[in-house]
Image (cartoon, helix red, strand yellow):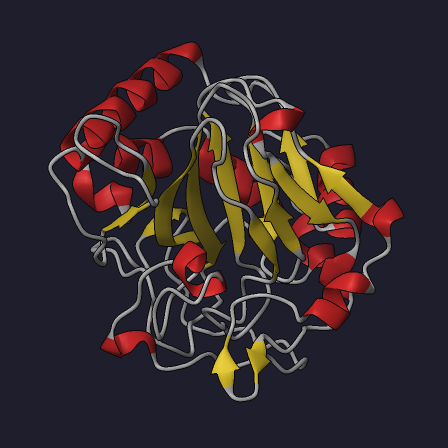
Length: 298
């Protein structure tokens, strides 16, 4: 569906102004969208995952560990596909208010693509360089979007999500360098970003960030004494179909979470960058941007 098609449908949760803002700017911050009950459950599940990570000594396709991680002081950098690891995460992704909010932005028929739980630990949680998501997992159209959930307060010194306002309507950048996938904009392209268009989306616990798959985004290191977990779920209109292997595959991949399955694909005429073949394995965007491995997936 086009933005005009979506805006012609009565919204379930968001206001008309919020929807127009998303289509104009490529992102949206909704403060306190998640109930306290859900926050308690998500915090409990996340604490369980951190405890489990104490027994992990090496990064793999599920557990991505920050340098210095140990059983005594766990520093889990990412948990891939948390929805497959703990039922609370999938219940939140599929049965909370989130699918209705996404339906207000992509149309009534919404499907799930993948999830990840990113951590920025106190005093040095890592930077994520400017990048665009859709090059990692191209689709037939540009409806896919990522929902970030702050399960604790997130201030400016904790490395909140940063976005480039309006960049979703700009070009898609080459995230290869000399034939090697880097997972970020080149130094020259990053340097050309207009600083006046950079917006950092800090917010209280229960807030969600939503950014379009074309929107340039990233985050600074965490310089505070508080950790910052960020639960991320990716959705798309049911008429968007992936061209390539899902780099962070989930058993819920392509599952409808709102509305129903459709029988026609919508094709956006704008071209899209194609990533490497992820079917041979990957780690994470953190490892990729730091050249810790040969390939990695956003």
